[in-house]
Amino acid sequence: MDDQIKQAGLIFMKVGLHAQESIEDIVERKQREFEEAGSIFWGYGGNTCHPLTMVQPFAKEVGKSGNQILIVMQKMNSKHAAPPEIAKEYSDDGVNWQPIPKGIEVRGSRYALVLDKLRVEEFDLDLGELQVGIGPSRGRKADQYLVGQADKGCFLYTPRDLPITQEEQPLKRIGLVANVKAPYAVFLKN
Image (cartoon, rainbow, N blue to C red; front, side, top):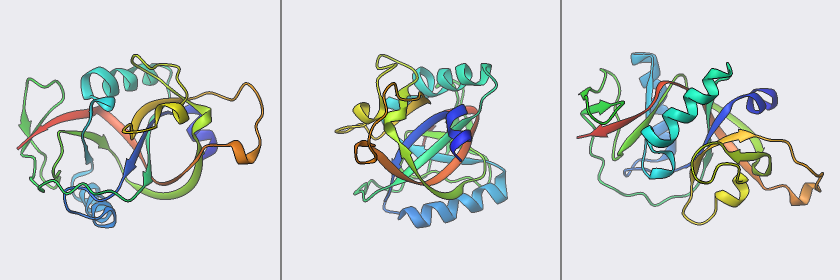
């Protein structure tokens, strides 16, 4: 996974209980979605990965260099108990809407990343080797960016300038990985 991470654009996201559904149940449902529909809509909220201003431009910029976009997810305990309302429509521009594809179900979310097959893969990711790849925080190290309420972002691999000890590495345990595909991120409505 190491070489793939170093060449890809990364969307890092902390994931857990969402809309009253456990992460294990979500993963199982999303894997079924891929089998039935050939795509997955991974729901989320928050403007740090806004579809039009962050994810789509980031993905297009990375794609120009011939690299792929990956989502890497860190499982965590969460208390997202929002009502599990199911989205009925999506839009890649926020203007033109169409029905959610048959076989796809997104609950309790404003946005969704468009993914291919979701893989359970466990490895450590050094946030000190990632930097924000778009927006006003571009260039900021991920370990400094992902503090407080920030639980997701668009990042690029950048090797460290100076070596550090293993104890100093800001590692996060990744548990889920998927390729993000066009149109990369969409708006949702019920």
